[in-house]
Image (cartoon, rainbow, N blue to C red; front, side):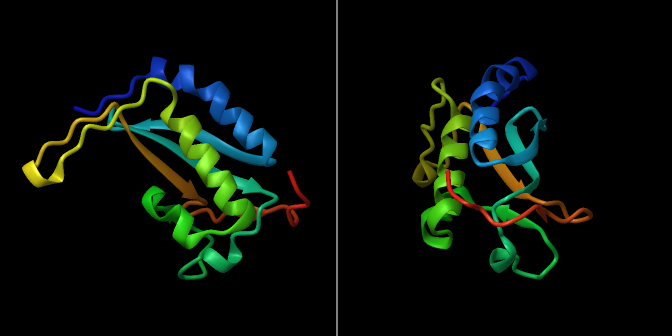
Length: 127
C-alpha cells in the first residue's frame, strides 16, 4: 500500500529543492492523503503557456506522458523532478492484470492551481 509520511517528505525535499533551484522554479511540497507526494509549482522562468489546455494557467502533469507531451527544457525539468520525488527508496510492484497495486508512494506535479495560475517570471535562458 502506498504511504508517504512527513518524514519521507523531509528526506526527499533537499533533492527536490535542488532541481527547483537548478531550473529557477518556486514550488511547494506537500503530502496528500498519506499516499501522494505532491509538488505544486507556483512560478518560474520556464514558459508553460503553450501547454495550458484551457488557457487557465494550470497543468496537472501526467508523469507517464512527460516524454510525449513536453520537449526541451520542460521535459528535462519534469524528468529530473520526478526522479527526485521518487528518491532512492522508491519501488513500484503494480500489476494491473491481477489488480495488484503496491508501491512506495504516488507522485503528483501541478503547474499552477485551479484558483491561482502559474506565473512565468521570464523566458528560460538555459541551465
